[in-house]
Length: 222
Length: 95
Image (cartoon, each protein chain N blue to C red):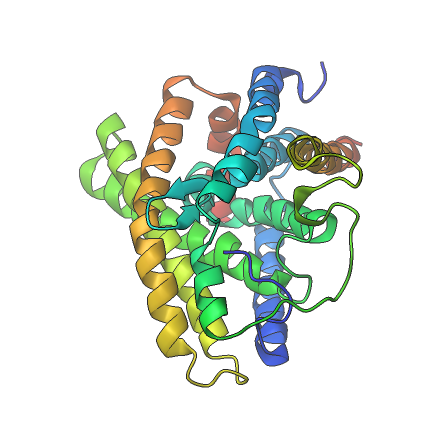
């Protein structure tokens, strides 16, 4: 999922940096009135958790592998605005310190994982819990669907970006099916993990949930 | 009380996960010839990574250490950077 340097045309790199920066400005405007040291600590602990989860590559029969991305998980816990900052921390550290994902493509990677995955996962979770009530079962189903479809959407978007880069004008016929089909299939596992972690955190009354419940609704309403 | 005090158990779990991570990040990944969907698409389009910059910890490795140990050390460096930045920002915010 992490797009390295050289895979995207400069126009896509610049455009997606701009989108990520604009989203970040809006997110910061919403966050700055309610953010406090407790919330920043909670966001950084979640970011550390996502970073570690991404180090686990799960081999899949057929010669591919998957690592957890966690966009829906972060969106469900902290909402689409605060979760953005979790990915800025994770993806910037991965790109600059470990060369995992490029620097020229950092905007694209933040867009795919920190915006598309987060927003799609969050929206699906909210749809399910609003339609069926905020019960434990609704949370589990919503988190599963959010995790699954959030990853599928983010993978498909990455395929579109690479395929539409002008150096590879017909690449979209290869990249979109490859990314969309695999991420839709592998997204089922992401959905299962997201549902398990959300259920665990809510049932254990984790400090992450406690703090998120204080700040996330305020960020959405400002 | 330190801001991270209430997350002590979470951080311990993360440390344990980092220690076992080479099993999935190195050993099993090599066994299945680690290929993300993105790598599959890139190979078909003959895309190559641009050599824009270097870091001493490329691909979660530490120079001079065997891959599995390097992967573990890189994991600790990663969460150290993230929690360190978080602690600095939180400290600044509390002033």
